[in-house]
Length: 219
Image (cartoon, rainbow, N blue to C red; front, side):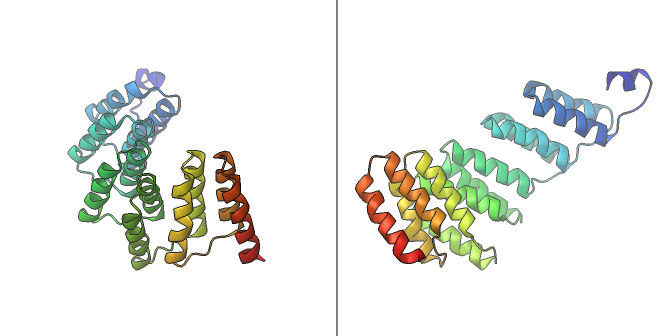
């Protein structure tokens, strides 16, 4: 990059994108805002892709204040957050336990005309499950169906797996009930995930009962 500058070659948006991606990949996050400023100073407008690289780098490290600052820079450049931007932010907030903030951002994206995809729904539903807001989680599943986004077994199993890993076995058990209410049938992976969760929690009697249920419904 420096040799390009010395030779009088003006980097374009693609070169800056590669450079910023490299910095983000190696974790040099402190340099990212300066690189964005350098782009603008050199008359190159960062596009959605470049802003999302920087935004996602901060959000995935739970550096929410920094991510929000990048969001402000994006808007200053006349760009609105897209589904990738909002999805990353909602996922980060949910993983930090800031589920109310994630719901606010979800509502904001709807208000701004950004249509959530299955990734966004999965992140928010997972967050709601971790704070026992089952009615809201169920409401979101039906909202997905209204938008013709079909919640699949992978979505549910992923949520259950994450809950079991965190020792939240009873919440994972409630996911099975939720699946049945929204018309998705648990499969062998659903049951084995939950059985493993019960075993890890020392609830071997519950695990044995669930094994019997699994055998009866999957054979």
